[in-house]
Length: 517
Image (cartoon, rainbow, N blue to C red; front, top):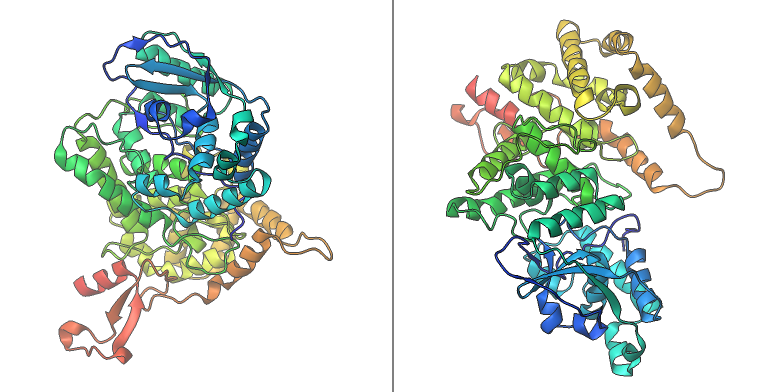
């Protein structure tokens, strides 16, 4: 089983979502507690809902889930939950993770049980499956399965979950209370808070559709355009596959890494958010810092704007790495990962911005002509593609500088294919490069005598093999399994044979340019 201790268990399927703003009379409830038996299928459990704008319930590690269940099983005190009732629905304003952990125990579903399989349409990432297994093992070893407690009668000794009721009569007040309570405890990431505040904007919906691969809660269900409602999850699944297939496993033992690292958790949400903004040229400040309102966060009721956003994201990623004719097939390990195998989101976003700029200025062919020496330069000095966030800042603040660096490298190699001369000129103009490269080399030599290799060190040993990756027969750039097609050495149009001796692997764009030139 993979080591998943630093990742979060996905309990999102265990308590359904509903629209907090549906027309219903507020109910003044006075029950002071929920019994554990109320979380089994029945009247109370069937009424429980999370607000549909709430972030995914996937912020706890396996140990945290097991610890909550153990605390409860021993009749120790756990914090009360805050509820708000509207009609026949009971919304969880605070405490969704606590209740979801208990439901997970009762239903034996930690992200890969029946509820989860139905909720995610059977499309559960391997990482989520590993976390389900790890959590179940921890719970069974420390507490035991729920069914054993139920049959043994020990559930009768367990304390009830204490409740506080939100008395606000209006849904808007309940929504504001949810964000205030969670954000005040630094539970909500600033990016998540922005998405929650604009839950029906095309930017927020497209982000969530991509990050979950078109599965899970149907954030698109309110679309009035039936075509948009049908297309949205399909596009989300396509984009998710472009970003996160094949599944990344650590330590990394192969160069066939996905474009964007692990397709799981808040990291996937942030990658999706920034890509939607970038591909659609939205005026969206850096997602990790801004809490303000954006002009691009108006509600998308028809779904047409969301579809437009998704189509542009898909095309941008197809340009980067796919088997579509326009694809340049950039190798993720060379362009988007550190030497230790860590995915770097800013590197991906910079590359997307750069390729879109090249395409807009009709300079793709200029890059292809120097691609071999350009990528040889990156192999020799990988720091060129790695954003120096401690020197330049992060996100949008570095992009213009990184794009200027790429442009300068291409220009230098166009004038002279000497890679080391190009490096000398680049490191003189962009002085942080030499400093960062020296720091990276020093870091790679750190270790302790007689100790085992870390996961990062093992991955770094794999990345040393980048120079031996197969190359495009036309441009000489590195080939990745997700971005290569078979080309006829002797053109098919001229009668070239289909025999294997006439076949060679090339980038899709190289193949397309050859056919049209």
